[in-house]
Image (cartoon, rainbow, N blue to C red; front, side, top):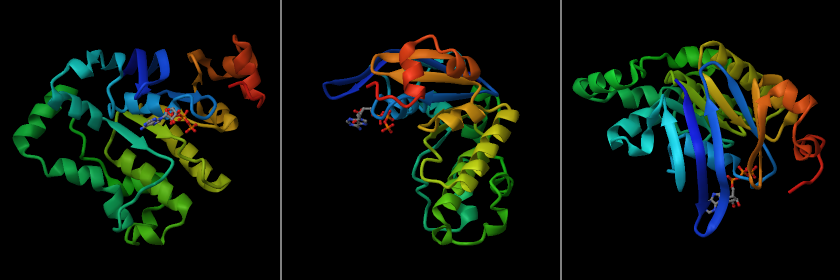
Length: 255
Ligand SMILES: Nc1ncnc2c1ncn2[C@@H]1O[C@H](COP(=O)(O)OP(=O)(O)OP(=O)(O)O)[C@@H](O)[C@H]1O
């Protein structure tokens, strides 16, 4: 399942964040979105997550222009996309109940609706296993603990498991490790690579250049005027086409 934003423009009130941005996420790849603070990395992820419609341009799920599709279809496409934010935002409930959240919502739907939606996206998700997802992030043994007993890093790992348990086609990660120590970061990065191995397409916004180098297949560099460069990670880091990319990677203030 390919998720693609094409020539999207977006802004808030009168302020344009970016224009003419195109980015696709294909199955089994990790795309890192890098760029200075405020250039619109989160905004782009929100457009890909179908939370917000672009001001112009299209967002397509497997070739379907989702903002011209009926609302019910759009909601179903949205459910194929797992999102993890910088802040874990867990519920005051057990780790297991948090990880199961998406599964419970889907199971509560009428059978007729389930069939209709399976025919739309070609699979029945919501049948995943929360404990398996917790195992992926090394927290299955804490399944019965209340989420508020977890450390910040553990909570973020549960947020990742919650997105994974639902069996998404795509995972969108908005700086998921920016507040984490190296050990918890490594757990999340391994889980990302595991998701990729299962065929999930992943886009991750990150300020950590080393993280992008470690886990991304492709890197998109977002600057004031849009994506100035996109390509295989090694090529973008070692031989960037755009001089601003090189300066940004080397830590110069360019924006
Ligand atoms: N809901 C909103 N209402 C108004 N302006 C917003 C909103 N969300 C983001 N912005 C503005 O849009 C611009 C892009 O923000 P965004 O969060 O997408 O950038 P970012 O690259 O993810 O930044 P950071 O790296 O600091 O997280 C910023 O100027 C921000 O202030």
